[in-house]
Length: 210
Image (tube, rainbow, N blue to C red; front, side, top):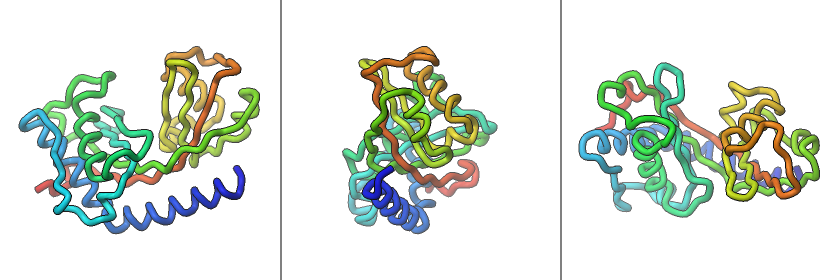
């Protein structure tokens, strides 16, 4: 990683940690409220600009994750910052609960067993490599989120995935499988971008979503 990339990561981490320290609970409440709105009336919550501080109305890229009894129940997000962070979280929370193609739509009787996390992503940076070995050598376990792409195949792992796949080779192999590629796949057109991310999480059942 070059100096400019390190500086960018550091600036993002400092600013985002401050944002989550100040507003993390509110972001979780927003995600939970959007899911509850989906359970009640089948659509996401529509945040109003006047209800949020400027810091939460700046463009941001987020992922929302639901786990049920510690097992993944849904995870949907944005790769780039294209809309206000509050809007992005509300939309992704709803999509996570009801539109993740890997799972059936969340039902009311699952809510009390669920936990919720919101992750905010930095802008991604392209990685330069000529082989899988070089790519593996560049990866930073427990730090890097990774986006891989080749043709129509693309997939993303958040940095939190390192907790269950701590070895670089396993991390990359499972990400390839998620993209619909063989675990030993390689080609000259294979690309990768990395990012850093910070998250906040809590039990949905403990949240005040009023």
